[in-house]
Image (cartoon, rainbow, N blue to C red):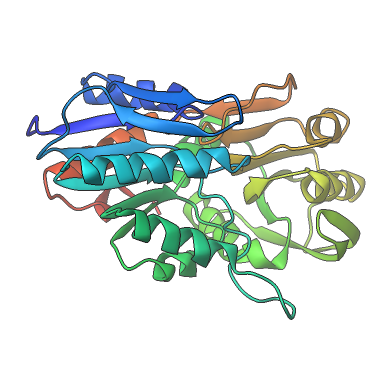
Length: 310
C-alpha cells in the first residue's frame, strides 16, 4: 500500500479514527482545533498535507458543530494543497430529511451534500444511509458501506434456534428481508402510524412470531419508541426472545431508559456514534476494520463492493 495518505479526525469521532489508524498501521494526523470564547472555532493542520490523499474521519451527528468541523477540515485541506480530500462519515446526519414529505420543508440531506461539495470534498465514504437515494445528492463518488458486515457475523455467532427477522416499520422491510435471506429465516413486519415525529400512535404485527427468537433490524435508533414498542408487542404475541440490531446508536432523550425497561434482551449497534450513557442491554461492535479496509482499497484502486457480505 502506498504511504502517500494521511488520516485525520474531528473531535467527536477521534475514538473511531484511532482504531482505523491502528488497523491501517499508520499514525493519526496532527490537527489543531482552536475554540474561541463565543463558541466559534478554527481548524489547522499541524503537518504538511501537500500532494497527499487526505482522509477526514468525522460523523455528523448533532450538534451541528460536528458538521461545521468537517467542513472546515475539508476547506483547510483544500487550501493546503492536498491531492484528494476524502470525507469518512460513519454516520451521515440529517439523512432523515431526504424528501419533501409535506409542504414548505427543507431537504436537509441535500443541503449537507451541497455544503460538503462546496467545501471541496472529492469522495465520501459513509455507512447505512437512511435512504439509498441520498447517494444521488452528491456530484462526487460515494462509497456506501453496510453495517451488515459486522452485525451479521454477530447474529450468526448467537446460533439462535427458530430465528425470525423483523422490521419495525414497512420502510425498513428491504433491509430486513436481505438479512432474512442471508440467515435463511422467516421475515415479519410491523405496521406503525405516527402521531408526530418520534411518537408512535399504533403498531400491528404482520406475520407469526409465536415461539420464535426475533431479531428486529433497523438503520438507527433515536428515542427507541418504535423499537421498544415493537419488542413489547412481539413478546406479548408469544415470541421466545426479542433482540434488536441497528447501524447507528443515536439513542437520544429517554432512549436508554426505554430500552432498559423493555422486553428486549439486548440491542446491538456499531460504534459509528459514541455511546456514553449506561444501559446494560446496549452492545456496540466496531466498524473500524471495515472503514480501514475501505480506505486501503480506495488508496490501491481496488473494488469496494467485493467486501460486502450482502
